Length: 199
Image 1: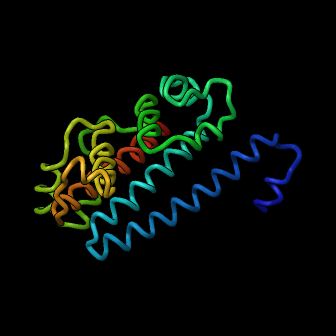
Image 2: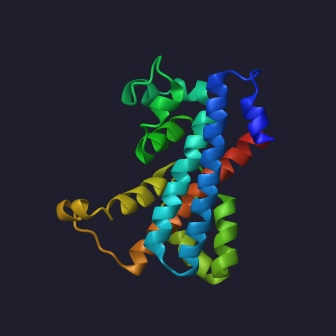
């Protein structure tokens, strides 16, 4: 069915290409979600952060494709990615996590709530009421993309050459904080998307 739909001449070539990209990215996001869950089950927090950050980046890329007109209007698109008048997917393919976070921030894709309800519910479910209170109080406040930046920074600090320039403590606690920030960022994007659909 998907092949039939994508092969239709009634759909412009660029739209077919974008639809194919969305399907590929959603399949990839699903893979990253499964890998993140495996890492969390094994308490491999830095690995969960790396896989989860890839999932966040993938989902933001899908959101970019689904919102091409709005994305093209962002400062990040015009001035940082220099995408004005160029093929959308070609320019988007050059974007890294930092750039899609900037686009998402400009387009208010992150909830401004300190702790989205979705995140709080999952923390209680997985850690219990008492532990969740401690965890939620330790999370960065202010909403927006701050938790995503914390998770991205932790992921980037795992690069060996970066550790020469900036020593970084690799401990279970820093890995857990980075992963919780990542999960907070994912919850923020999902919560904001749900809220925008109901308003």
